[in-house]
Amino acid sequence: MNWSHWFERWEAMQSAYLPQRQRRFDLMFRLPNFPHDAPLRILDLGCGPGSVTFAALRHYPNARVVAVDADPVLLAMGKALADQRISGSARQRDSVASVQSVEFVLADLRDGAGWAADGEFDLVVSATALHWLTEAHLAKVYRRVFRALKPGGAFFNADHIAADDPAMQAHYRDLLHAWQRANFDAGAEDWDGFWRGFEAALAQDGIPAQREAVTYWEGTDDGLPRQFHLDTLRACGFADVAVHWQDLGEVLVGARKPL
Ligand SMILES: C[S@@+](CC[C@H](N)C(=O)[O-])C[C@H]1O[C@@H](n2cnc3c(N)ncnc32)[C@H](O)[C@@H]1O
Image (cartoon, rainbow, N blue to C red; front, side, top):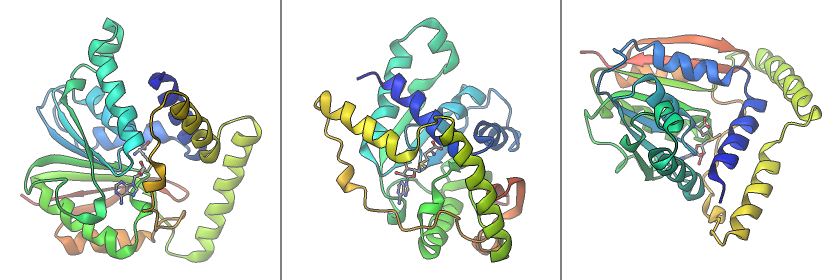
């Protein structure tokens, strides 16, 4: 299985949906302002094949990352890439210096337990994942994140987050879809196309796709309204709750657990 090929296709597919995807990854690690060489404990929620996790290790090479997802096939891709990078070329090793410091964990975020100990993490991050959850489950995850952070720790979530005004959100959606359509018309691969190709490649190599187990989508493509996120984070006890970056309904929200 050529995992690097499929990871590149994943990155290209996600980037066709998300303007400035890499920019938001960059900001979620620069804004918390930890020293570059700090031995941080980082948690990546809804990690998929590890896009944010690997970005974390480029920013903080001495960090240890726990990467959580409920999709065993995407986790398998992340694990394979981490292994390849450890045994790979010097250039690959340099690009993700401490990739052996990743632990990929199969868990459903809605379960609330098992994926993080209390007070364990300096930084919790998530990208394009929490909009899969209902209001009730997202509130539960935010409470869990608060407990998982050390005092002074930070949470950064880059996701689809809707405008509070439904008319404005409809306008955002139209503009975003026009931008995405232009990418697909120009030949970019979409979500279904990626999965068709990836599942065929897995089958060819005799690797069980196990995707029939992926039954946990319960969200909305627009995400929940921005005010819901801000209010819920404050209700959990977070301070410095703020929108740091936004492009239509793509938003980076940050929050800090008080000391
Ligand atoms: C669009 S992907 C984003 C993956 C990665 N963060 C990225 O930016 O490339 C959304 C991910 O969230 C995961 N996810 C959604 N709901 C989840 C849940 N309840 N528990 C664990 N993972 C979940 C999915 O399995 C999927 O891998």
